[in-house]
Picture 1 (cartoon, rainbow, N blue to C red):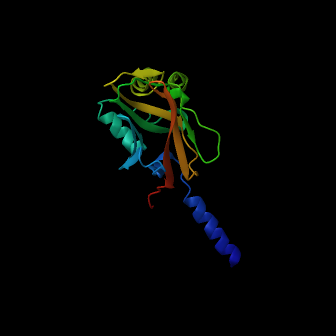
Picture 2 (cartoon, helix red, strand yellow):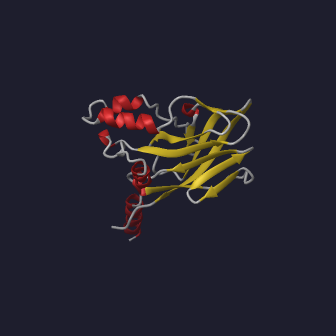
Picture 3 (tube, rainbow, N blue to C red):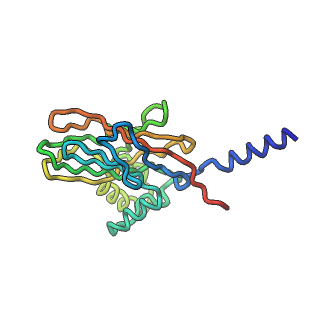
Length: 204
């Protein structure tokens, strides 16, 4: 009897394990520095000296809506070899007197104590999509909408694009994205944005 009950628990645990990115919810969690961070709905917003940086995870549904709002086809639908990605919409607004310098490829996601996961360089998508009949079109959309190289925001400027990572481990419970090597004028900062990861499997 005990063995039978144990097998049931094992079965239920396996059944509840997410199999794809659309079966997890990645939601922001408050950080200790409440003076500079706030959670607005599903978005984490950092504010300091009239600089605003927001980070929002885009689930497959939200990603599709993101491209629909821009009248663009979603280049990540039915991706070759079933590849999935963890994608964040990141927006900078610079209302300070200083310029902001940021290299998005220096960012990273940390899952617990694991090694950092680096963003995918836009040029890497050329290899992933090279054999697809619509690969060039999809590549151009990614290039147009994703962060790539270092940029500078002058006072009064803003920039919004996608930061694309490989799919996280779906069994993880928390993840922290760190925007590294940001310069506010001559001030150098690393900014963490924390998220909870929970299973979101619809009932059968």
